[in-house]
Every structure is written in structure tokens, then in C-alpha cells.
Amino acid sequence: MKKIFEYSAFQIVEKIRNGELSSIEYINALFDRIKEVDSKIHAYLTVAKDMALDEAKEIDKKVKKGERLGSLCGVGMAIKDNICTDSIRTTCSSKSLSNFTPSYDATVIERIRKEDAIILGKTNMDEFAMGSSTEYSFFGPTINPYDDERVAGGSSGGSAAAVAVSEATASLGSDTGGSVRCPASFCGVVGLKPTYGLVSRYGLIAYANSLEQISPIVKDVRDLAILLNCIAGHDERDSTSLKVVKDDYTRNIGNDIKGLKIGVPKELFGHGTNKHVLKRVWDAIHALEDLGASYTEISLDSLEYALASYYIIANSEASSNLARYDGLRYGFRSDEEVDDWSDTFSKNRREGFGQEVKRRIILGTFALSAGYYNKYYLKAQKVRTLIKKDFDKAFKKFDILASPTMPILPFKLGEKLKNPLEMYMCDLDTVPANLIGAPAISIPCGSYDDLPIGIQFIAQPFKEGSLLQVSYKLEESLKD
Amino acid sequence: MKIEKSLSKKEIKHLSWLAKIELTKQEEDLFSNQLNDILSYFQKIDEANVEDLQPTYHVIDITNVLRSDKSRPPNPEQALKNVPKLKGRYVKAPRIV
View 1 (tube, rainbow over the protein chains, first blue to last red):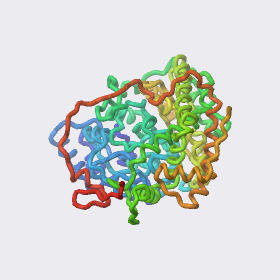
View 2: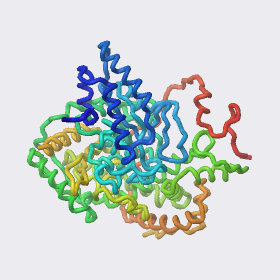
View 3: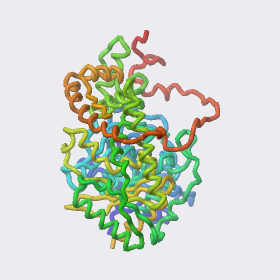
View 4: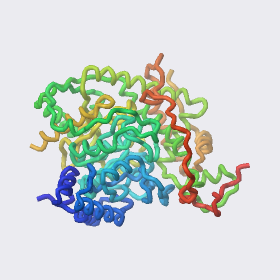
């Protein structure tokens, strides 16, 4: 028999709507759960209990009065700490923002609140979303729910772990180079990076603005459809938000996949891929074959340059996006008083930023600097065009592409900290989707030694429907 | 032509000045090795044949998205809420000139 906090968002909405479950009882159960496990998992940085309980009371009143209830009615959600939440501390897991409280909600927050979701708190992440393990958090790492010596993945480790152990029913993260798909894979939950421009970035504290999207992390594919319906859609406050006709993603749930053509790029199954990961991913691809899909192995040559191109572009954009943290209008300001402005800013940033953030800013500054801009930044953006052309060709023949989400199993805490390049290599399979702005999903496809493994599907821009369709069918078949 | 680039300590100091991040001596030493490691990997893109290709600065095909020129009432309390060193309604700032 399921415990209250174990239900999916779909089940919670149903039970609250038909009066079977009170919002207060459910929210209290979630906070009890957080109290029970979070000292071990460390998913949360800030818990907003009073606000959440007040909102739960309001939902119960609405139910009693028969008033309109939103599509996320009562669902308890965790929010990555780089998404602005009015009056709730938002730190980006950085010392530089450890006391920052926004006075507005991000657009996605306004939208989920409008549909009656309840925010439980803010989750741990790699500082400023720079990392693949949540070990670069100023507040310490988030632990993998399946092995307390291993990482939860990153940078949205807190959001993924919270859903995995039911400290939240659903969560929001952000994905710049795999930061939702990676922890979703490592924690055994579902995470989707939407098409670039589908979900508003207004209120998302920027790391690399041409690559990132706010992304849902959920227990199953049906929940993903419900949450995506809520957060997707044009926002005039985000100039990179697209005017698209809003889709109803729940229409794709349960649709047949007979005749679906799957491309399998061999470059995403490189020789560094763990053999247990390979086995589970190929089992999943064959399971889709049994359901009527077909697959073909293909080659996308330009993928060999994807990781280098991604890190040059991301670090360059980061060096610009993080220039605002000078300690004057907000953020960490050193007590040391110096007269000169350049020294003042330099000292504030020296103390406020962690090592990985500094590394990336310095690299980005280099790639954009006079004499090197053409060789690095401009070249990387041309390589991006090359990669996009390769994918466009592939999508003429295939509906979706499949690969492992992560080439490796969740690794041990501390294992990759000495060598930053080794950490970057974890993102091999996830960065291409960000470079081309395509939607990509990670869904659990088994485990090895209890460690979760995820399969990734990538579709053409605005074809989230195909991803939901194939993921739901796979999820169903894996339950049997 | 493959470009072999390696950052000297002097260049790292210059980059830290450009980025306005003061590095400790240990960080300069550490970064000197790590950044050069990472840069050698970045050198990979030299091999890519991108002749005749335009750069993709943005994946979506939109330009100059404007909004109407409507002002909103100011809210100084909100705007100054997170200022670390405030004097009345003034942000305490270092000397610029």
C-alpha cells in the first residue's frame, strides 16, 4: 500500500479533487518525509513550511466550496535554487547569493502557482548550475538516494533526489548541458529538457542563456505531460520565448509507437561507455522494437566536437552572465574596504565564488578575449551549426534518436573533483541537445547493482509529443 | 593548422584582472595546470571543417523582440532590499573616478 508521499502528481490531483485526500494531510506528510530523510540526502537548502501549509489550507477551502481547482491542484513541488521565488531565499548554491531573496516569482513559478501547485522549498545544485554532480554546491553535496557514497548527479541534484525519495511529488530544475537529464538518470526519475524557447527563462538566474531551459523532473511520464502543459508557452517577458501554438502533451500518453523510426548515433555509445549502461540501454531499444518501432545505427561525425564546442560557448556566456555579481546591488560584499572599484569587485568575487565558477569564468574570458575570439568562441559557434546540420539530416529519416543519458554509472563522491576535465566528459551524451535547442528526455531503463541507469531520447524542436509517446510506452513495458 | 595554446601565469593574472576575480597564489598555480589541460581538449575544434558556415549564436530564428515603451511605478524598497551596504537610499559604492 502506497504512502501518501509516494503518489504521483496525477494521483494526488485526482485524490484532492474528489475529496479523498486533504491537502493539509498530504503536505504535512511531505514535510514529515523531508524531516525523516533530508539530513542524509541533503536535497533541500530552504524549506518553506509555513507558506506551504497556508496554501494547503486554502486549497482545502476551495475544494469544500467547489471552486475551480488547477491542473496541479495541491501538488507539492521542489524548486531548484536558481529559479526566483518571491520572498523565498534563492542562492544558486553560492556564497555570493547566500542571503539573496527575490521580490518576484519567475514566470514558471507564477504558472505553477496559478494551477494550485504548492512550493515546498528550494533545492541544492552545483553553484550557478556549473557541474554534473552537485558537489560544487557551497552548501555541500546532495547524496544519491541509492548509495550514500555516490553523487546524485548535477547540476539539479537536489531536485532529482527530492523526487526520487518522495521529498517532493515533482520538481523543476534547469538544463544547460544535461543538468536535469544527468541527475534524473543517476536518481532513477524522469527529466525532460524542453525545446529551447518553449519554457520561459524569465526568473531563471542565467548561466549560459543560449543553451539553458527550465526543465521538469517527475516520477513518471504522465506527470511530465501535466507539468509541461502548465509551464510551456510564450512569455513576453522572455525575448527568447517562442510564440508557439500550445500543445496538450497528455494527448501523447498511451499512443502506439508502431512504425516509429529510431536513430542510434554510434558516437553517443563511445568506448568510454560503461558496459552495464550499454546493456540496459540496448535492452530498452529492443523492448521498443518489440512494440513495433525500428532502429538503425547511424553516424553523426560532428558529435566528436560537441563537448568542446559546448564548454567554450557555455563558459563564454557564463563569463558575461556572472559579471553582474559585483557585490553592490546584491550579493556578497567583502568587509575589507578598498578604495579602487576594480579591487573592490575583485575581492567580492574572489570570496563569493567557488573554484569551479572561477575556472569557468576565466576560461570564458579567455575564449572571448582579443586575439582568441575567432579561434575559440566564433569557431565553436560554427561547429554548433555543423552539429545542427547533422541532426537536421538525421531527423529527415528518424522520428527520434536514442542513447544512454550518461556514459557511466553514478560515481563516488570526490572521484572527479581533482580533474575538472573528467567531470566535463560526463556530459558527452547530453550537450548535443542543448547546442541544437532540441528537446531531450531521460527515463529510467533499469539499474546495475541498484544504481539507476537512464536512456535518453532526442527529438526535433517542438516534438516533445514524440518523446512523451515513446517514453510512456517504454515505461509501461518496463513495469511488466 | 593546429593552434597549440598554453596559458602562462602572466596571462592568467591578466584574465583574472579582466574578469575582476582576484585569484590567490595557490589558485593561480592550480589553474595554470587545470586550464591548460582543458584548453588542450578544446583544441579539438581546430579539426572541424566549418568553411562557409555561419555561426549559430542562437538556435531560434527570431530577431529584435521589442516590448511597448510602458513604464511601471518604481518600488525603491523592493529594489534596495538586497543591497549589502546601504546608506538611506544610496548604495555605497567604491570610487570610480
